[in-house]
Length: 196
Image 1 (cartoon, rainbow, N blue to C red):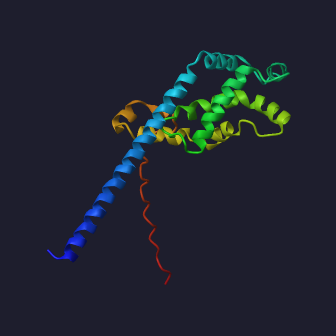
Image 2: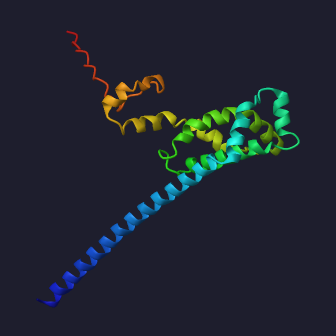
């Protein structure tokens, strides 16, 4: 075997080794990302089920911040700690979802919960924003604005057999729910007659 052939073979072997190493690195990064997502999911679940967060949710649900007296009591002289607890939690999660740090599908429940929480927090946010002169809790509001719930639910539906989706009668909960986007039938072009 000539030196040229041996050199070419060594170059080819080196390229194969580099390719295999690159593929292994990509797989390791993917597993690392999944591990981080799982850790985040478990940590957020722990926080969501904590005694402090449960108390904050109950408090928030029991208040009518449309009433000026209730709103004043919750924001004066300082913001009620229970409101701060739930707002800070949702702000942090919303920021991570809005920036693409958290997986949209795995944390999809927040797309369902956040609009309800924002509806309750919005009057409080208006008072705090006016007082602070800054757009506090903007990521919560933006997550609601993005309105990803329907798109995510449609994505979830694609994971289930079409027969199940049809039998589950999800139309009641998700208007227009169907497993996959059905192609629209083509309308034949009208026949044109040329004037004579």
